[in-house]
Image (cartoon, rainbow over all chains, first blue to last red; front, side, top):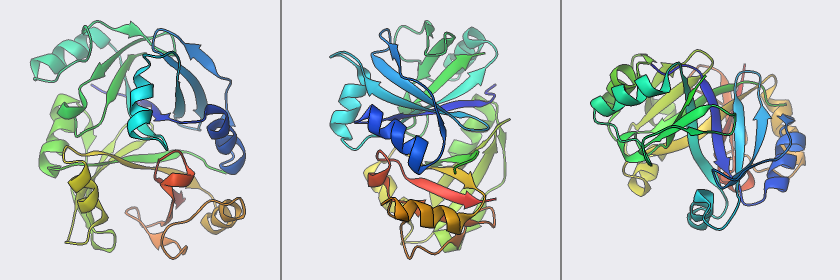
Length: 134
Length: 134
C-alpha cells in the first residue's frame, strides 16, 4: 500500500537558523518559507535527490507544533509521510485492520496541495505517519 | 554535501510485530532480521521505492537502543541517515563549522558495511543524523 517516502518532517525552534544550517553546514537545496494556516505551521522544504525534509515551525497560538516544541525545546523529528495512490482506500483498509486515523478521519489538503491523513503514533511504534495521495 | 536520504531508523519494542505490521498493514517490502553486534542492534530494512526504513531492536545489554526504548516504550524515530561521498571530508567540514561528531570521531562500519558517523542531535534541531559514505 505505501509507496515512496514523500518527506521527513522536523519541528525546529528557529526556522531561519535551521534553513541556513541545511543550506550552508549540510550543503542541501533549501526552498522558501510557506505559511500553511490550515495546519498551523510555516514550512520550508529541503530537496534531497530522492526525497524531502520538511522543516516545521508553529504558526498561530494553537499550532500542533507549539506543544511538540514545548516538550522538545531543541526540536525533533515530528512525522514521516508515505505516498499512497488512493487515500480513501488506504484509510478504509487501515481502519479495517484496527489502525486509528487522527481527527475527523476525512483527508485535509496538505502542504503540497494534496489530500493527507495522519495515523495514530501509538499504533505505529511511536511514529506519527502522514499519508499523502499522489 | 549531503546526498540521498539513505534511511529513517525507528526503534521498536517488538521487532517481529513491527515487521509484520509494515508487511501486512502497510503493504511494504520487508527484509530479514540482521544482527549488528558492533552497534548493539538487530535491524530489519523495509524497502520503499526511493529509500528505506530501518527497524531497530536492542541486541545485548548495553545497546544504545535499550535506553531509547526505556524513555520511549512505544518506540519512535531514532535517527535519519544521509549519504555522503567522502565521510572524512564531510566530518572535517562539519567539525570546522562547530558541529559535534559522536564517539571517537572515527567512522565505524555500519549496517550496510559502509563507514558511518553520527552527529550530535543538539547541534541539529534535536535530530540524530547518521552520515554514511556510499
